[in-house]
Image (cartoon, rainbow, N blue to C red; front, side, top):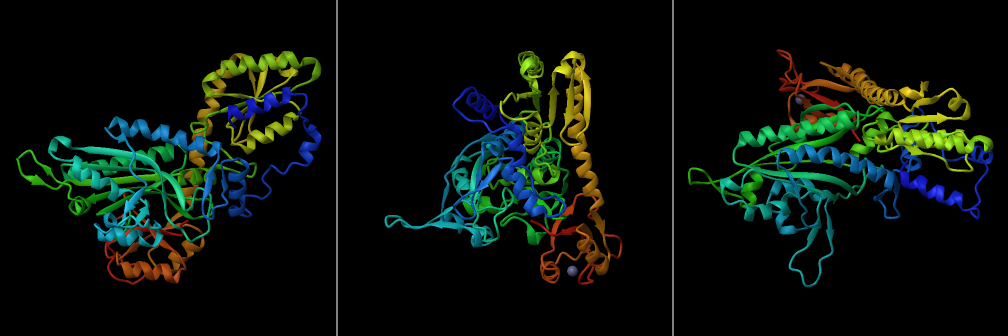
Length: 505
Ligand SMILES: [Zn+2]
């Protein structure tokens, strides 16, 4: 998918010593394509798309995955989308230590307890007085520094983000991008003078996450608040964006936590206020991870392989010249001219030798390139190209004079189509229930079910138990008020709110 890959192959093909497989044999012996249908076995299909589009691979280290260059490039594109948004409101990127002393963890009791089952500890060195955790998240190590940096109201707001990896010792099976013991993420940690300012920005970061998910990845999300039972360990409130995967499983795509003053008190962060008194600040933290890539892959890709939303794809077009010996020079020259014309879209010119045009079409489809331009001697004679969209397979003959316009239009249309398709699925896969049988019918129909709930933690646990895994996803910002007199879907007590239930990854 990248330029580098193709340049590498070009160099090889100029090397006469390097044997190239014949196109015909290639197609027949091809094991590169996806061999299972998305609708038949989504788990196997997903694994094949990720592996064959060369996004990621399993590692010999159990529970850990490798991000390959194609996958890492997507992560960089996501970084490039979020960074300008957060820096514009004053967030700066920094980096904190990987290891967290055990004593830091114990300063915030709820936080320590919430993370304890999945914390990986490194073996204590004989010279060290205490043991260290590999960060599962960095609140504690960062706030220790903050307690020295924050002195007066003039130091606030303090807004810092770090791009790093964290380790959480998962015992469930590894699923590339969705669940692994180490994953890449960003974590933002801010300190404010007032509760109001803190809350306002907590919501602002969530809105940035919605924009990244919907406008870059074309994955529609539901915005809401986590139940108290499900909120971040040590937080006052957790807000999240949730999406629904094609198999009906819910996926948390990002969270923004209103931390209140709990961590500030535990870590001794205080400031001299404008009125000369010592005050405790308000904090938030917010994060999303490479899981976003998994959601994007699962949502849009198809039986031919990866489908990348155009805004996300770096190389938005593959130009495939159709080569015959007698017209080769002319065709390549024309293809290069078009590549130059479309430079702003980073087009890949695929003039690899020894592969048929059809093989190349499949290869670019597998790797998710949004548009393909086919160009042969007949097209050159007619002063046109063939433009093919990855999402719909739609083919269009485009006169040379209109290439730029048509490409721009096709990229926009594809970005919108992917989002609209996913949004229609999300809408048709959410339902409401006010009594248990309807609730179970919705869950069995692989839907997200909005239902009234009493807010009791035990009741939530009981629902999870009897349904073998159904959990609350979020209390939506819209539609959270239960109808007058509504009772809890499970226990029949007075309902406190409407909450989405579903099965999750
Ligand atoms: Zn209940």
